[in-house]
Length: 547
Image 1 (cartoon, rainbow, N blue to C red):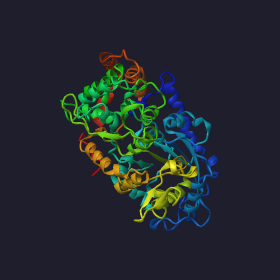
Image 2 (cartoon, rainbow, N blue to C red):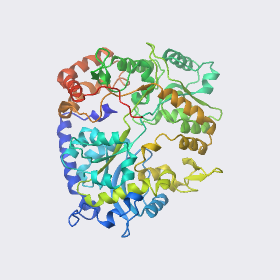
Image 3 (cartoon, one colour):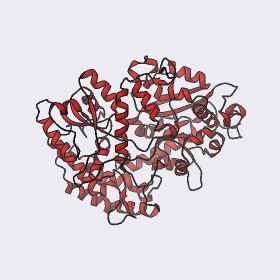
Image 4 (cartoon, rainbow, N blue to C red):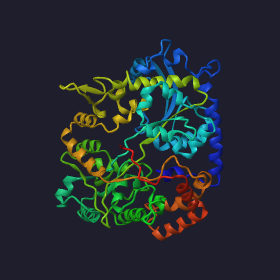
């Protein structure tokens, strides 16, 4: 993922990026008047008028008496971009929250590029989804004054402040303690399971693999079976990230990690031999027809899941067990799916899961939308207090049912009426507290809702097996190298982008050629970037985002 963000085109790359940044900054600062119909003039109390904030924000955040809360925002959507404004779910949300939200959605695969390169369109909203201070582009805009400082609103709206762990707020703060960004939280342990067709393995007499070598042998047997199916494919993301937890069996962290020689020095994955061993192992599988020929080539990230759900692949790296199982049953009624336990690697490494920093984008407030800030925070506060049930479950009979025990059971998306499907709800989702990010009761209800409750305990046990051996990224995401900010994208494009992005598309690319390109990158400034990160990040200890 980091590699994708670095990939900007050269020549015009840095020049274009700088130009776009200037345009974006000017629009962030200057366009709120066009979007909100007002400016901050005449509102000198920082948006803390009674009608904007409500006097009861601390005890649940009652909505204002004078008209609805209003703000516009832009965000990515992970599902299909089929959101229709004015839908039934939107109307109910607006009614219950006394809010009017003007949402602009962009498919997540296009969001980062679109939000930068279309800045000249002059349509920046009051609230903007971005990566926050962990990303140089957004951090630079923040430093230039493009976004509103939110400390006072966090102090006023306690439910919003409490939704995010104090340690994460600390990461969002600048060197003055000022915070500009509301992080969208994810649980740091997100296993990408190795799912497999248990019925096919049983038919071919293949025992569940426990090592990488046994997995490879199983794939060879599937290819030779004459079934004409893909031995192994990957889920809905880029192949090496979909394979991140298989990579741990090779000892790769898919992130910065300490060197064997010096635990006080960390290096990026491109410098780690274990990472290269894993990537070129996947390349070798692809050469031999054991890994999907479309991996690293097909721009449609969903191709692998489509094949697996249709019964045309035997193993998939990543993918959600619930949706995989339900959709597979439609194509192959007798099909079954199981999850391989973390595999033992070629050198005896114990596989596990690559732990992630518990933030995936979040919200900035336009600096010139100060009159909308309190309204946005009041809405967030409502969604975490009075409106918590609506935020979590939606509308009874439309998005959930109540079982005999009084539990709210989600209705599967395919069984919902069109106005209440996830594509209509996701664009109107905002902040969920960390306390809900690993909610096993909610997970069980989700399994019940889809009719596969018998799979829940198995799923939970496999989650715990993967989580037992965490592989962290040791780099503090808020530490930025000055050299990387200055020339990082350029030298990456010059020397590394082609080789690192071509391992699964150029079958003639060798590990030696990769290392030669890497050396050029190091000489051009890569080594300085590594040295600066190590100098600026004082603690090299293993991060802990769970406890």
